[in-house]
Length: 293
Image (tube, rainbow, N blue to C red; front, side, top):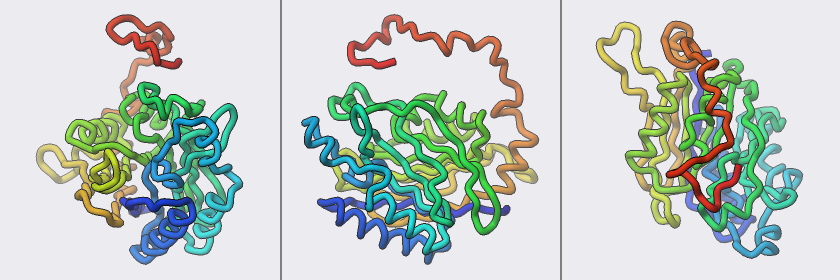
């Protein structure tokens, strides 16, 4: 498998679920014309990352996994012979979740991931049910199988998210996003790719959507290339602020070769010394009254 092409759908959402369905399906068809293997949406596309603070309105805005909205993208994935990562405010008990559904090119749901690190400092996201684990799936593409995982927005700010996905075998991590992507957050993504030797594809909403500025990005995680002097820039693509579909081409064969010979990832870790990472205790200065464990 030489490459994996991911279409970063940096789109401005509409004003209704139906509008987002139609605009999203049209974008997926355009991604297929660009020869994408995966079309990936920004965070919570079903609502445009609008989270009602009233509990009744919140539940009314949520869509079940079996809803027409979600399942239409599964059927479209089969029709286009292209994987689709659709995001939604998912109906769930005791409260909705912030979710990515990844359908493979046969229309099968192979990854159902809910955001683990909800932004509990936000009154909106604190109302959501956090996810309970990280998952990796085998994605069958026309060119071969690639192991894919996911994290959503604030998940990427916790290094453990990408680390556990790497340990579970992820080669590519999909990252739906909805926040300003500035130099520090982009540096976080570069670091997550570098330290785990994984490809990372992030999709944000464009400038003009509240609290967002585009700059969807992709990093291949390759810090050193055979035959090149010095370090290699792992950035594959960084979009500007405008709405659009941006294609990131991951060199899968090179990433795999790099992971077999380089020093990062799980090559030289000493997990026996990391027990404190599993502690539930929180000391100052990190105590927060709204923090959940």
